[in-house]
Image (cartoon, rainbow, N blue to C red; front, side, top):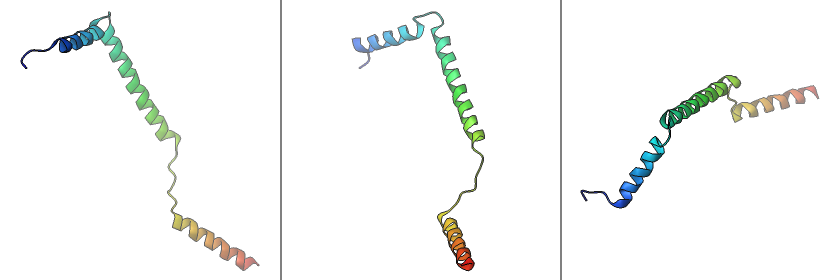
Amino acid sequence: MGSFSVWHWLIVAVVVLLLFGGRGKISGLMGDFAQGIKAFKKGMAEDDSAKPAEPVKSLEAGAQKTEAERRAEGARS
């Protein structure tokens, strides 16, 4: 258990090649990651500002309003 098998070393080699294989590979990955975070924050800010706060309507308030309207219509007749 003290040493790694061939498969462990092969996986480590693949990870190292992916990270350090090209010039500027890590900085490119970090730049893409930062752009993704900025886009996410911008999207969250747009969602908050696009929807004005509306009071929450309950079902009971809607039923009372409808009942009041019925009474008003009944009084008109």
